[in-house]
Length: 124
Image (cartoon, rainbow, N blue to C red; front, side):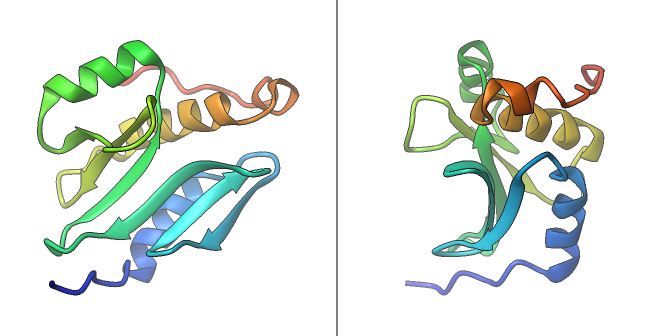
């Protein structure tokens, strides 16, 4: 079985900049790095055995269905009813990532924390 690559520090730093939310903290995960609010995971970036980097996060039910049908670089995670993700590469739309990660935080955070977050305008 191939090894999973370490997430490049520059990629972690880029995501860190998008995940500066109240009480959201970064920690090492079983592989890669994750961000949590209290005990709920907001985002998890990791290298896959295929040597590609992915970030998983939470989405609203109608968004989950869309992720299932969009195809690469989007995917539905194989766990949880609201877990989806994006393969990160040179074509990643970082404005869209900001929106997706903000939505994930607002889904996972307690209401009083989520209400304190400015939501970006939808991409496109």
